[in-house]
Image (cartoon, rainbow, N blue to C red):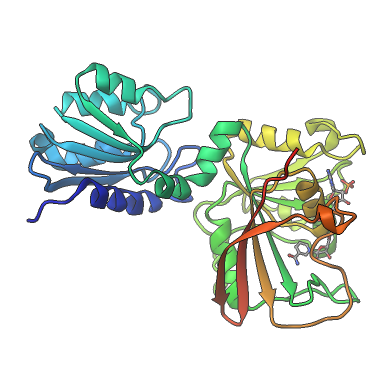
Length: 353
Ligand SMILES: NC(=O)c1ccc[n+]([C@@H]2O[C@H](COP(=O)([O-])OP(=O)(O)OC[C@H]3O[C@@H](n4cnc5c(N)ncnc54)[C@H](OP(=O)(O)O)[C@@H]3O)[C@@H](O)[C@H]2O)c1
């Protein structure tokens, strides 16, 4: 078998890491490729679920004795602490690995220090190979660990003229089934889904991740969060069914902002405490406006249908913008056609000051 370069092996490790997306939280996704002393692949692994073996341990088990004198290529700094599993740094040292190549250092103060432990055991450690790519594959977890609140993706559906419902309030469905299937897949990758009480009162959504063809529930369900300052969510609302966990987040429990409504920054901090690393903000327009006005949105995924309504509520209400100079500028990162609709992915540019 031909030998593999460290760069190629890291690309493979990043691919492997992505297989864990949606199932590892509150842990990161991690991939690992082990090369023997001749540069041949002797082990591969990824972290599949929280509590399960780490990527390095899976790869080491495959490699057995062939790991000795070899190189471990990992997307994230190997952990240095004993949690539900033992430290990966020690396992790599014990297996006799000579070199460890890491894409991104671990920002989690509880688990970091793996690189230092490896170096002090005489292992060569190199950092930063394909760092940007690995960072992008783990962006929600890394962002949430660095700043202490979850990565927020605002998702909405609208017509080409930006309407989220018709003048009479009807809104089902603005976008195609293909776009809605895509949304359910997106729900399956996050830890929590957030909606405002306005949406719950208007649409009575379930907010579960489902197979739209047969209605079956995905194995892993995000926590459903209703932002509801004074507890107006009806007792028989669908979000209260037993299909997934639900948190009706009131101002009394979370804390109130100046307007007496739920303090959104405190809400995100509370979710982080519960192990939530990525959230999908599903509106509606008023709650999304408040999140954007507070600078709390990291990514926007808009599904735009090739339809026009000419009247009716808009997809976004009051995002704190009163004049064009205050417009929230976005960096477009992807445009993909989903069925007849467009899925537009964009990142809000950080505002100065
Ligand atoms: N097209 C789409 O993608 C989409 C998605 C979702 C919904 N919708 C549509 O949107 C409509 C409902 O939207 P909406 O704007 O009336 O309701 P909403 O955005 O879902 O909820 C707004 C409510 O959230 C509560 N809230 C709590 N804390 C808040 C805070 N800090 N900032 C702002 N709001 C806070 C407020 O009620 P309290 O003060 O009582 O807490 C507020 O009235 C429905 O017609 C639905 O069909 C469309």
